[in-house]
Image (tube, rainbow, N blue to C red; front, top):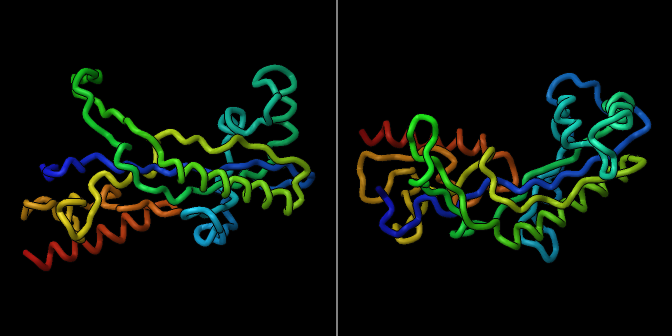
Length: 236
């Protein structure tokens, strides 16, 4: 339904993240609460030579098991006394700077039903295919460099963190697969989430987003849901 122009499921976005870690002599968090206390939108737009950008923040404090999995410096084994010592001595001394990148929609990035693979209930599972747009990957690398610079300017004795992973995301911030617009030939719904050609069928989630922006999309999703629900109630 609503797929007359083969757009349903296309332009999948899920946010490439630019992430860096820095080690400090002083304690930088107390492992209480989510941990986000400061952010900058300086790099969300206006990056010379790059399209878009992203927000950066001292992102969430990592639980110990996630710290062990993701935060240990490169070259340090994930087992043995060295890993235990780093966990014990550095858990409160490592800060994570991260942020989502404003992705450029790519119609090859899509979600479909994999009819040949079924889950334990016998239902067909979702299948992701395609790519993250190359310009998104390039911009993510630029913002990743700014994350390292932020940590160094804050007094970190060392920084690390691999370049952003350009793979499709299936775990968070998914958006764009039923994009809204004003022309049925390049969108799935109208500006209020009503699927073209159907008077009583609406979409009110992140699938409406033509682009996902350089922020967590939850507030945009909520705002669109309230706006579209109000429009629907007024049209009854």
